[in-house]
Length: 176
Image (spheres, rainbow, N blue to C red):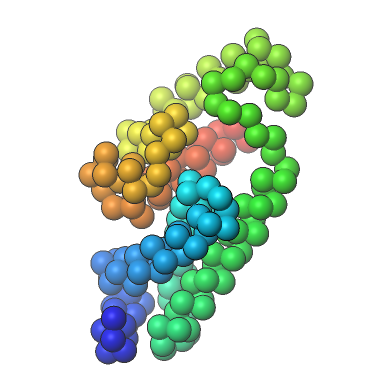
């Protein structure tokens, strides 16, 4: 992308044009997902991290003060680094048990796991259809956001946003 195209897309994105912002961010997404997949040794984690950074960039694009592609890349890379740090901190704190196993987690026995699982299904049923589908495809199907987007017929950003919104809503319900 040349300098003029970049500037035109950036101006449109700052004025609220979602398509222009999508074009700017998609270029960054592809490059960073490949890099992070090597660093994380996990494509799903890389997609999660970059996806979270994409959402943050979408929310904060008006705060971007740079004018060049290099500045935009640096700004976005900073968001990705923050999300990578958060991801690594969360990973340190939570136990990892493959889905579908009956191994106790934090002292939870099988009956308590069954209750938690039933409550999770009830919460999933309360989510809007798109969020429910995105969450199920991601957690149960272990699909990437690109695969979820293809299955649901939406953009990768939309698939990630639906998943994120669904997980956030379930977290709020748990905290109540």
